[in-house]
Length: 420
Image (cartoon, rainbow, N blue to C red):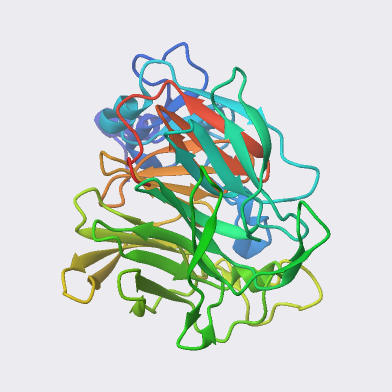
């Protein structure tokens, strides 16, 4: 077949189109090296391209879009230094504001502790969070009234071991606690027997703790992971297996479920039982949609019992975010119309929050997914270290993980829920 001059020009134009930059400077951020915009969601990459995958043995945290190699398109190198990777410019740049900044505020403790359950208390201007790790029996408090912020131990009465999820609601903190083993008191030689994994309520000013629920009709809960309180005061919480994974409770006797607890009656009811390992949970601002994340890529079936954590990673396991319709009923709302809305690009979404504007924020791998209410990827906040949870404190977004505690400041139109 003989190519004409016009067909040669067409071939050349197509080739040029294929290698046009996938990543560009964002409009208005031309001098900001920490912000990058991805063209058309990188839907077409010039071949060859390669991404290390956990299926082929890469560390799950390194199985990420920003590490994709495209030899013929050097623009992707911008992603290595970008803290804010924008996929949807119309909404992403609005969220970022004029001068977004990511900074590390505190280093991680000497142990390999994860950071969980961050809760902001407006009346204290402080964040209380937990280190659910063996041998750590106190929570921590970040005092935001000083410059720079200070960090100290926060001990409750009685102390609570291995808190994994927390929410602020009408002046109280509600905790999902994983542990059921005895542990030494942080303040005296006494030995404390935590009743069982369950949901606890804390008055942050008096530091008094009340147990709200710790069993399902006599069966020990597995290890409540995260929770949310709806406008009726009902508590929805995920009950996964991670307390056993870090050896703070016994082997589970219940499947991994999501429950609704009614403090007004004491009734505990199942609302969802199809996810492999339900984890983060949140409700839309209008109260009509519930979101639950699945971290079923953590596989407990063949995990060795003599090392921690007691799971292996199955890259093909569940790692989606699901949306459910919330339906009113006199005994408590129930869920219908389960649908997957987001398949995590990196690892899986752990800590999870819904903003006043309806955006979904999920701590996933080494950063944070910022999604629309429908699960559209708007942008990623890339930290370069494992992030397990997040929390707004005023206009700032705080990120918590193995790599330390970070703050994102200077954001635009995005803010946390009042009761969150």
